Image (cartoon, rainbow, N blue to C red; front, side, top):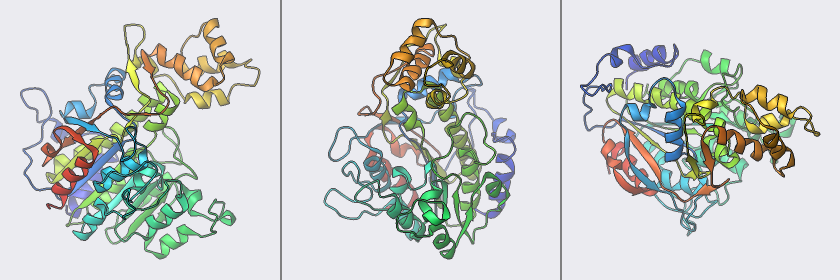
Length: 445
């Protein structure tokens, strides 16, 4: 995609992050906004991964929204369901699932970029680079977390964060990295935690990266096709999405910058965008966090779809790497996901504000949730061995939502696609087939 389209895209996305009025004015008889027909050629792929997301999240989010259906429903993007098991377990972790999506090969839980036999695997980033395309990775976790790592690193254990970070900045196929994890790129003398004492940010700059550290840096930096970009906007993961941050960019803002930068390449690009914290929501059974973070993810999806409609040669693919939490919904007129709009922080953060004697428990959770809690409900939290989970369970109940697990599950997850060759993903498929569909579309063999 040529530079003039990238500039136009920036102008659209940075003002309101909404769909172009010109595009939304053209509607089909069904009332669904439709672009002109896509051709068969794919020059770019934007692969969005809502970590831990499954059908129940999608259903709950539909009820949570108050301004129309989610973009993936509005554009009728649902194509099929994806099986997520790893090579050694019916229930995958993010390392094995990320590897399957990035390389088309199933591996064992905890392993990134290697087959079960120890063979180093070639990822879609490697293939895109060989085809002359640019590549970018964006995440709200640390950028060297399991899912983004699977696209550009190979380690026997997913917790080798130092090794992953080093591989990312020295990978000759990576043109852009945006996310958290600053402390894992710095030595203790610099305020980081790298045991090897290496200044990886300095190494990245020596390797041609322009470094960005704040939201202001991102918004003030002009995308330049001759440069590479490393943005580390937090010491650890980015903040939970309960409102805009002064110092940290949103997932949508990082996605906007990434598309603007990568789309200046006439040879095309591959971009992976992870809504990382939806998975953490499931582990904590935090219904409000689930809806708020899904909203942040949808804002990024809107940008990808908007760009695809302008470009006509961009394939957008959305799939979770697995389900987390076994969410189910039993909404009624009184208990409904829409009750979660006024919740202002995660359950974990609320409990941090409560003193050890629980004397301010009711004050804190009433103020931060805008919900009413009975005496019996307050006692459930006080007597629990895990007050955070007890609070999250109560808030979920008031939203007509429930959880069967605080871990990953084996259920299939939905896959959505939009643009040319979106039919590559129809039916019930395996997570390795997602890689094959993207490879076929982007590389062609």
